[in-house]
Length: 168
Image (cartoon, rainbow, N blue to C red):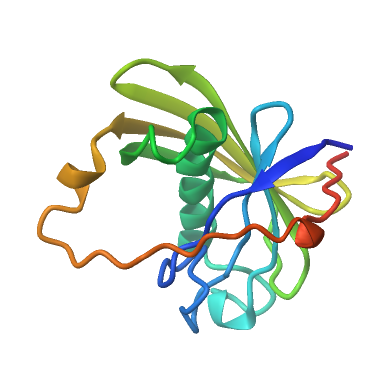
């Protein structure tokens, strides 16, 4: 079992973490004691490609989200922000919807301008369903958001809601 240190904040409309997005996953993300980020989440039927399987684009979006959040787990979200330069996804087994899944992301290379993250989506028994490697260009949030209407992110501080996360 890995120790949870804190919960990261959620956005309002992000397709992965947005609490106000009716089509979103609404995934929570947790900073872990080992410096990784983890999430316990589930996709819904409206995230499917074939019946019983999550669409590959949604799987890839979750891996991408875990990538940036792995940077935050290591450095804090005020210090590190970036944009995806490249992302590879390996689909190992069908990813089901309406079932609890575990996501994990780890920062494996970090420079002043770039970051490389490995992330995976696991079944509760620890079986790897999909994984990927993301490369990010670190940018100031003012450059990323230039011309965009920015909305307030939603802080989260209810420690009682932090689950026990176990990964085989």
